[in-house]
Image 1: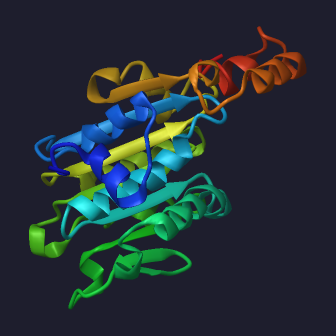
Image 2 (image 1 turned 60 degrees about the vertical axis):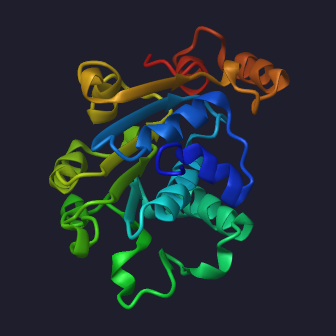
Image 3 (image 1 turned 90 degrees about the vertical axis):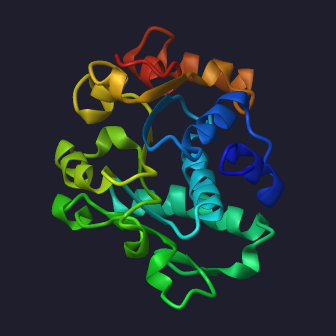
Length: 239
């Protein structure tokens, strides 16, 4: 059931009631999608980084065994956002006792080989080649694997090139999300010229129930409704 509708796992295992777009996003990673790529352009406060963490727990829970690798523009950014959300969900999970939590890695206990079933984060800012070589479990021929790239607008194209080879096996996925930035780079192209290769989401802060109207008004006064900053960080548009 969870392999066909992953959003049900998020509800049952962690008690998370998703927004409609979040539910649709999780269900993109159902069994049979083969090689799925998802790109999310979103405004502040909409839950894009939280979704990266929720997807990680869900993926590890429904695909057995599986691996998740995550990166961002800097190690500090990835740790402070994605990994902290991941820890919070671990504490909510009914399977908390089955997961071993570490500073840069979480893995499923009870496996003879702990390298078969885990999630890990790393920095790719200094050396894009450091992300090469990550694939799904060897026992599955590299299947059941997902790359997660948070704040993807700040990640170089060379990183995307380095991870491309890891997405060839069945049930290999890519999730990238970010606020919008300059109109160039792989994240921009995933929402425009490469849109046919991705399932895309655009989530402005103005439509999210998680962002209060007062916060929207504050940002509008701070940056100006027609400013590039407001368009990028609130309206999820490329200025």
